[in-house]
Image (cartoon, rainbow, N blue to C red; front, side, top):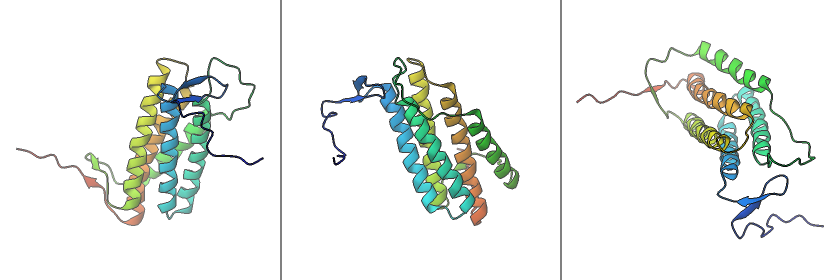
Length: 186
């Protein structure tokens, strides 16, 4: 049997969660894991333009964690799916924190807000950071309505911090200084 990419089951604006529950494609749960999926794609693009092997490896690991988060968000919390889903661990957050601390130690002190930009790699990381914040916000909105594992929100929060620092660190490695925001004074 050949696998088809289209099923036509979503043509009426509905989709199924893991567990079989049909919901609107505008449901908060669909929005949350859709934002995580978009973030995963941006991280893939960030990985593609990175030149540091250690960073590309870390970004690929993060993509794996984002697939885990997407699967957890796609599950109907009211149903026992009897399906083994991957899980997120506190150690996943600690890895990000350690990376943030290591990169921050190498960076010059930040004395102002930073304007995103400087190179394509830096700009993509800032776009990923903003997308990560959106995924976090949509997960928080969902949590206000339905159960969401607290580690998901914590991981997304830390990941956005990681992406910000990685954007600065990428500039540092490539000799591109932060672009400080200079507020206009009238």
